[in-house]
Length: 280
Image (cartoon, rainbow, N blue to C red; front, side):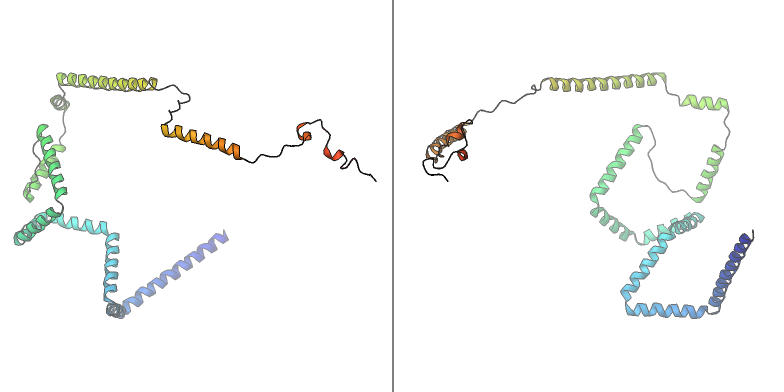
């Protein structure tokens, strides 16, 4: 228990010391704030004079790091600023476009010339999407501007519609209005069965073709040798003649002694070298 109290006292004392140090630093900076700012300005001026390009590069890098770190905060602030009065921003954009209409059109034409294939692909996708919407009976999708009063009315109407409590009878009528007709349901089932049957038939055809190919293969075993060509026949004949000539001209080995041929013959070392001479 005493050890725990001692540790807690040491921790509190260290905490108070750090807090006092931080407070002293804050007070000192508040008293000498202008000196610090002047020192920073002088340091930046020296760096700018020493290497302007490196200074600008470092400043851009610091700005980029700050933007990456505070991206969400900046975007949230911009969205909130836009939502406060969107009509004001729209009016400013319209005025800017009216003043720089030719520049905007020229920039758009240049972008289209640089990305012609990309723009054509986007246009084709848009036409296909609109065609599918018309075929499905949906209205053509268009973007239109709504004033602040219209936005307020639309929001009020949406709140009134979605906050309404529907009765069971109304829900039944609504569900019945979107119910699939019996003939459409039967046609869909027939199409599904037909698609399944076609798929199964295609699978059977592929399996039958595979089995027929497997049966048509040759039996395993040694493959027949190909018939020799006239050139190969002539080369084989010349090789045979060369072997016969070499056999005739080859130096023959001396015939071996009889004991090499007869296993029962006595070894030559057992016989005296000169049986007719004198022995010691």
